Image 1 (cartoon, helix red, strand yellow):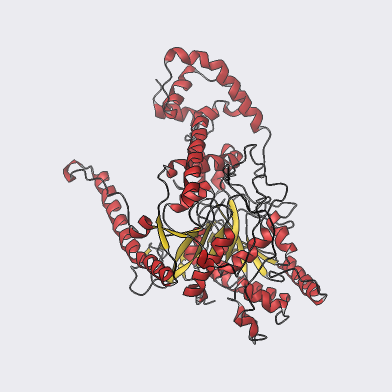
Image 2 (cartoon, helix red, strand yellow):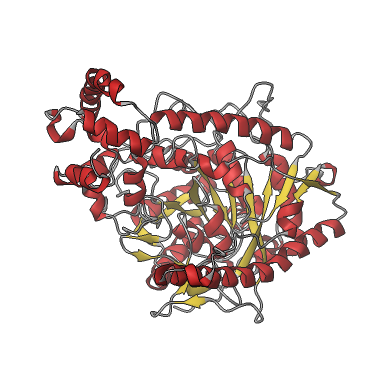
Length: 616
């Protein structure tokens, strides 16, 4: 048997990264090198499948034919925009979707709009989209004035927060003038008419670069607007900026720097919808569009104190958006209030004839919906156990090597840090339940079914590696900003070790999980959950929607944030004055009930009315 390291170095010497799956690399550079029995033997070890020696020779012809097929597919140079023939559908047999479109019912005119023309346009920079829309509709503020104000704020605070990749200033001013002309002519497009917004820079906008936040893609352009961009144009909204995302939708570090949290700029804004959340929280756009595959709306909304909606998978068309995982990617709004997310969702949802995952379900926003009649559950165990981590190894001290002892001490330190913060933040979660009960909500304990959800996450890794296959094979992945063990270049390479059979098996397990989770939601219209609990992984896999909203702010008694030698905060905890969040879940395509209930809680608590104090 070839020694593993020698075997991998052989492949590395042929021009491939040593972590790439030999099974995929058997075609080797130009496809001239044939697979050998020795390669099969070592690949079998890596795949965890025993293949006796007498069977290896019989496999050679078949595997070499496969290798030629791989090479033929590589030559197609398939762009990121092409989805697989298999389409993920979270809707199970028997599920009934609402398909009758009804007139939208929004809340009454807001107090801010009733006050009259603002003396200083920046006095309304933190107003909700609902409030700003009313100011525009009643002609107390023009779209041009709002657009100029937000463009100026983006320029003023970007040096501190690093949330802008590209300003779309010329396009914005043109659209704003058009919005004002239309309104003067009696052509009102709805509650988003004339409102400036920001797009996560994985959405294509014709005439402007779409960088995906990644080195090597800085000047990438597309000829057509993304569907979401077209729909917001049609709603009269004004795109003012393409906002930052971590490279290829990973975290908050992009090729131009690290996007910051407006509540504490020493901390990153989290990712990957980093700029969308930061700019919205900083009062630099009326609202923004983000995306989520596994936490990319939830995490930055939490960090920046925004209200973020991750819609049901298959509600919003992703045409023109960078693909990371075709079976998990979702586009959704990041706003300053729950109703804002409803207004934006009303404008962007529905089939576009191109994204085959999108269902014909409708979203009917009704601000007057009687939320008190909704059946509400809560993840009891998750609220009662905010701190639950494995203990470090209890191996006797005398038996530990120096490296093992160092590793254990580091684990203990991380565990203690996590415990302190989790226990502190737990009081906000308990207060949320108390507030809901004070609102006369009958909270019913519920638990999500037990499945190895984390074992299904490699589905994302495999799809992401396929989406950026050529980036890995050509070695252009070295241009990406981050190259650590948890970053995309390493993940893409490691994903090539995932056997096709195991990818299918994980999808079959996902079907079982979908069925069980759907059953758990049958008795509820809304389920309340801690944002950081296992539900985030569960519902991203099974497709249910989530609404994340601010749920308070850490006090001066909060455990201090951990800082590195540069004075930058590391980890999820920003210390005193930073926001915490709460999450509301709902059954598939039940956003109307979800948002009505979440809005009632938000109005009762008022945390969304607090805003960071910025210094230019």
